[in-house]
Length: 495
Ligand code: ADP
Ligand code: ZN
Ligand code: MG
Image (cartoon, rainbow, N blue to C red):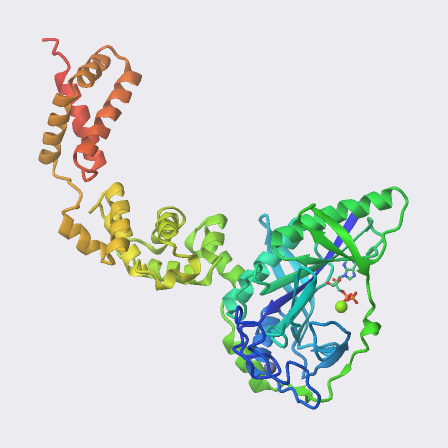
C-alpha cells in the first residue's frame, strides 16, 4: 500500500585532458596542488574560458540519453562557501542546461524500464579535503575539472532498480569514451533522492542520501531508507526533509543536515562566459560521434546471433569485448554466422575468461591482447572441422597466449591433429584393454550377462583411458565405437 520514488543525481568526471574553464591538466593522482593556476584557484580578476572538448563530451552524453539540446545554453554561478571551492561559487548550469528532458531504457531482471532524464548539466568539480588527525589538508588538483551532472526524474522504485540504472549508465559513458566510470576513484558519483507515500498519493517528502561511492551502497542505502520511511509513516509520523549520509560501517543512513533550497544558492548567469548558440554543424558533429549504444547492441546480439541474454550482457559489458566478439565471428570460416557466434560466446564466457584472469587481461583491454580475434577464430575453426579435439583446443588456447603464436602453426608443429584413422585408434584400444584386463573382462561379462548399466560404466571408463593414451587426440566417437567393438568381439561365442 506504500509506494516509493527514487531520483538519482549522478556526477560523471569527463575525460577531457584539461579542466573545464582553464588549461590545467585534469589528471587523477598527481602530487597535491600541482595542477592549479590562478583561474581554478579563484584569484581575483581572472577569466574562465570554456573547454570545447568537455562541452562536446557532455553534449554527446545528453544526445545518447535522448535529451533535447537547446538552441541556447549558458552557465550560472551557484554560490556557497566551502573550503574546497576557492571562488566561493561553482560555475554550473541552471536555467538552460545542455541536455533536457531525455530518457534511458534500462534492463532490470529481464524487463525493460524507461527512466526519464530531467537534465544533464556541465559544471566544475570542487577540490578535495583530506582530514588528517586534527588538521584538514586541501588539494585543489580536482578543483575546476569537468563534471557532467545527470539528473533523473523520480521514476525508479527500489534499490535494485537504482543499482541497475547506475551500472547501465556507467556502461554507456564508458562506451562513449567520455568517463572511465571508476566509482572508487570518484569518477562516477551518485546522490540518491527517495520518498515514500501511500499508493496513489503521489510523491512523498524526499530525503537525499549522499556519500554513495559504489552502486551496491546505492542499493543498500535506498532499501534501508525506504524501510525507515515506511516505518515512520506507518506509525503516523512525518518524514523530515533532510540530507542523510550512508554509513558503510553501520549499514544505515544517518542525518547530516537539513536540505537547502535552490534559492539559497542565488543562481545568476555567469557574466564571464558567453551564451552558447547551438548550430546545426554542432548537432551534426555530436550525432556523428554517436555509435551503437550498449543496450541496443546487446539486444541485437540476442536477435541476430541467437545468444542468450546473459551471454549478450556479458559480452556487451565492455565495448572492447563486444568489438572483439564481432571481429572473431566474421573471421570464422566454414560455419554459419549464428553457429560461429554461439561457439565463440561459449569460449569467451568460459575458457577465454579463465585464461584472461590468469594473465591479468581485463575485458576492456582484450583488443590489445596477444590472443587476437583471428587466433580465437582459428581455434573455433580447427575444433569445428574436427582437426583437433576439445581437450587439445584448450591446450592450444593456453599455448597460443603463452608463446604469442598462431594456433594453426602450433597444432602443426606439435602434431596435435586429431587421430581419426580407425586402424591407429584400434591399436590404442587393444593396448589399453590389455593393460586394463580386469575392467575389460568385467565389461565383456556384463554385456554377456545383460547388465547394461554396468557395461556402459565400464566401457565409458575404457574410452576415457584410451583418450588419455592418445593424449586427448583420439576422435572420441571412433574411440567409443572401437572399444565397444572389441568388447563385443570378446564375448564368448555360443557355437
Ligand atoms: P532539488 O531542487 O531539491 O535539487 P530537484 O527537483 O532538482 O530537487 O530533484 C533532484 C532529484 O530528486 C531528482 O533526481 C528528482 O527526480 C528527485 N526527486 C524530486 N522530488 C522527489 C521526491 N518527492 N521523491 C523522490 N525523489 C525526488
Ligand atoms: Zn587551472
Ligand atoms: Mg536540483
